[in-house]
Image (cartoon, rainbow, N blue to C red):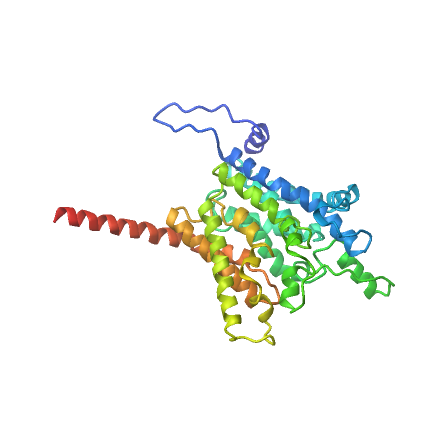
Length: 389
């Protein structure tokens, strides 16, 4: 049980181990501090998500006024926070409790120290799921994600797939009705819909996301500021683009997140959006097409709807599963953004492809780095031949 004891003993402190031989580079940060820095960047999204969970619930019931939106008193109320605490905190507890239990189990069985890699994953998971997802589903998905997404590869630093996105992929494919549609994004909508089906005289709650509305060819009732501030239905932590941008700046300033990956992902998304806008403007696709709704979305608007920004900042920049070379980061990020919008448009049944695009590029990241390195080697060999001649 030494790994479990040491993990608890050194949770906030460094172990009293010192090096004795050779030359060592000493820096102020380590894996634990790096993970805690990312968590700090995620906390504002978590707190906002709690308020938004209650706000969307009472707004759907018609019990509050949305006139003042983000700046209004109806958003920052204790009632909204209570709903958020009641629904979101259990997600956090289950995510950390189950995930760390699996980590401890593997550490004890294998006889190695408990790794801190799940600290960030445990915070990411509650932010990328619907607020009403059953806790047992989340627990099953966390076990799958930690075991299949990380431990089978050897643990932290060895995995090729982002564990948080592996968890979300499992949830989507195993329990699709709880991860898509217009009922899962607002607290109480699924339960209320079931009560109506059972004969109760209640009004249904609609919690359709902006992407879902566009995919169905409907008009969107939210203005751009609603999308930017995040007072819209969606996963717990991905709605507020303002707080995600603040988190991105913090991660870039602390040199934890790669600005190359973030920027290139956004460039890739904008490029794909421009291509689709060009197709619509050229008249190659008509309004009768099921793809028209999302194809006609202004290219820049793709950045403030859905979770492309959240994925670019907190998921694509995972230092373990992303490309490691500078040129590779540009290619890796661009393809994530490009493929994300492509999946978003061509999959109206589930108009969001960020997690699929990132997982796909996780697999190809080593290949990208390989060819970048080989390209550099060939350039240097040519220089040597020229000098030798």
